Length: 600
Image (cartoon, rainbow, N blue to C red; front, side, top):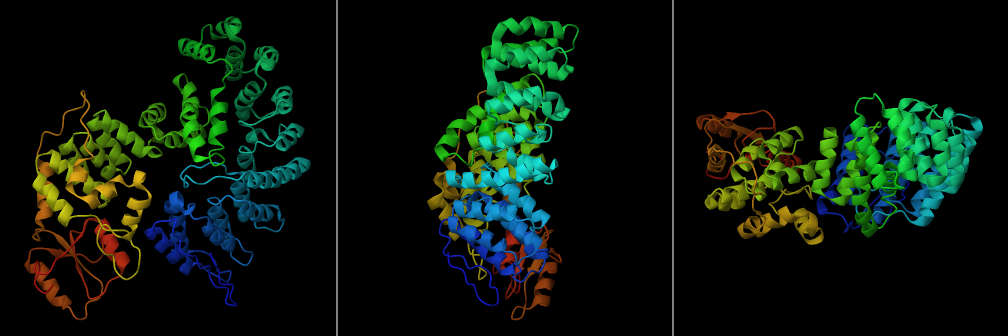
């Protein structure tokens, strides 16, 4: 990538960006054209579009390592605080020696504004992959640079006796360096929040001796870390302290003792359980520890969760399933005391790409449905849980994907019913309708959908929107086959769409008993104007806008004043922004064709 370092402080000029889809290239260029260059505040449209680009582009941006230069440019001292902070966010997707050095310098500089410094600290510690591109991986040298910077900051805080950063303890949970363990050992009471899954034996011994000095909300984590690090060596200390601890801590110590020492420690647990509610459930947990000796599951699972961006893609795929099981193991007996563990579990489930594990997570923690939405809906469809899927698809804003899964797994009428509630005209929605109509015995409607009602393509230029599949979709079909089956099926035609179908489960719930969902598709394809809404999009100079408006009313339709959701049709003026047309078509509006309305 080349950058213009002109006197007017020009924005960065990215190169070909061949490693990212064309639609994303367009958005990067668009956002860069809006970013301030002379220290002005980052706000309004520029801030909103940058935020959406970071969120929605996260799965792809890291594929082009040269795009790191954009983050380095945003991080320059001359920019506003918010733009510099967003520069640190951007660089999280591009771990390398160069980015680690730059972000470390920002984090260590005393004059760095607090919001920028906080984000720099988090970026240095963030070793999780989550939604980032699968090729993302921290090099060992970059990890060392980041660790050294974080340890220096932690040493200064220890000397001062005060942690001046909210992000620092959380960032330090990712660090495996023995130097950090030594810092924690100097002041364990100060660093309770930073203790989680990484420790050395000397630190674990100090933690146990200093357990009373650690804040109560951090002690369960500390106890698990101690036992996972010391193993059998921790047994005498666990047994000695158990009698003096609070009930929750005493139970945790006894469970850890059983996991490390076996059945000899069951009588102490039975004595504690005498007269307690849910004693049988706690006994089940004891049996789990006997069957899984030497395993502290939350610690083992978190060691993977905190390091997924340090691993290769192959290692990550191999380790995420077991780590997800680890974080779910103890929830069979009690909820996790800290909610963040469910988020970590969810990202491991996504790393494992396993619908069954998604179901187990949602069963234990229904609030996690949103993080594993697609996997959860896929599992419900495979098992034929039609009513449950319909409700979940609505609450999770996933009607298009839910409808597609129902169509794939043999419930076409229910699929069309769910599809009718979708807010956006997406490839998944179109594929769901086409497949569902075919499986409902209306292959004629399938043919018409694929010929007349395809989704809009992604915007790739300001000149025109074009037709599906556009450059963006063709690129994905060629370069991301595993993630673009729906796009490929729509582009290939009826046989490919029908090829997605799978047999329904033997115990699946019955399909919707009404053909009204099919009738709704017939009405949409019929393109009737009476009772519909029409928007006149863009500028009208050659076309007679007043005459077209009169024709709309004559046809029994009514005009709307903007590209609102629910608009049925639009008339394309002599000129209109591509973004407006894309918005209309994504919302399901259809362009009025020549001959359908007088004057068009």
